[in-house]
Amino acid sequence: MPRKSLLLAVVLGLLLVPATAFAQNAVIMGVVRTETQQPVSGAQVVIAAVDATTVTNEYGQYRITVPADRVSGQQVTINVTSIGYSDGTATITLRAGTITQNITMTEQAIQLDEVG
Image (cartoon, rainbow, N blue to C red; front, side):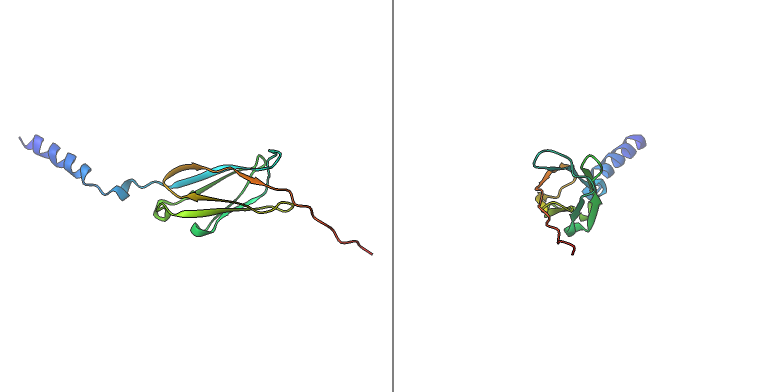
C-alpha cells in the first residue's frame, strides 16, 4: 500500500506543477531579401518591444531568441535596416516556439553630392 500512495503522490504532484515551469522561449527566424530575391547580408534586425537585436548573415538569415518571461502573445514589430535599402517591417504575434518571418527590402537610390 505505501508504494501505491507514493506513486499517487508523485503523479498528482506532476499534474499540479505550474504551467510556467514548462514555458518556452520564442525563436523568430527568417531571411531578409531584396525584391529580386537576393539576400541582404549585414542588415540590422530589431524587435524593440523586447529589446532584441541581431544582424543577418551572408545569406540574409537572422535568428532572435526571446526569453519565455517576455513572451505573452503580444503583437511586436520587426524592423530591418540596411544601407542602400528602404526600411523593412513586419508585425508578428510573439508566442512560444519557432516563428518564421521573411522580410523583403526595397533598394533605395542614393544620390551622392559632387565633390568640387
